[in-house]
Length: 96
Image (cartoon, rainbow, N blue to C red; front, side, top):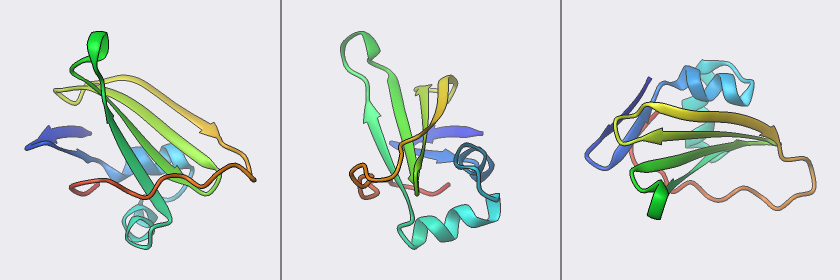
């Protein structure tokens, strides 16, 4: 469901949809519209070889920690609440 190739992640839309509590068919259109944004952070030090992927939509965030082979190490969702600062603009490369 998560692949890492040529420096980019490819994630099945169903994974993102489930974490953000939306229908899978809505993921790509919402990303194109900038209503789902994402962030990828690369681990350093003892976390080298791990990546944290975060997907933001409205008041929810999905965080997935994966290794270089795309194996999920940790996954969580959270309500980031109204009134908090806006999620970051998408810095993603590739597609879901």
